[in-house]
Image (cartoon, rainbow, N blue to C red; front, side, top):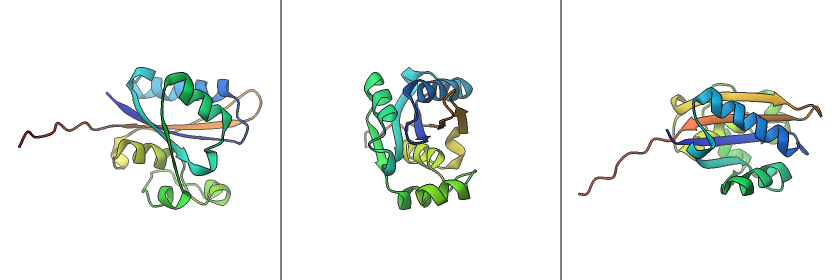
Amino acid sequence: MKVALGLGCDRGTPLPTLARAVDQALAAAGATLADVVAVASIDLKADETALLELAARHGWHITFHPAATLAAVAVPNPSETVRRHTGTPSVSEAAALLAAGAAQDALRVEKHRLRGPDGRNATVSVAEVSLTPCSPY
């Protein structure tokens, strides 16, 4: 199974907290780091150190989407709190679905949240990427 990750976190979340959240979400999806083919988040996090370090560690390219793009994606768990802080009701779920190029039913982990020992939060969603074979015609 190939998967896409949608990542969200509090400003200043340390890498160990984000990495642990990713590991837990992948385990819940029955996937591994080797199954990750796409990663996305909100453009507000384009300079977030832990996201950039995690991507570099695994050789992932992260796509960062504007809030309006994420807000246009139908998700199972929209949040008014997230909307107040980011301008979209979903970061991780919407980002995972955009990265996977899929609809809601592709979510294998909807919204896995982890609060690290420092009190910072990371959120990870996992969507299955549908790989449809190309026709030779």
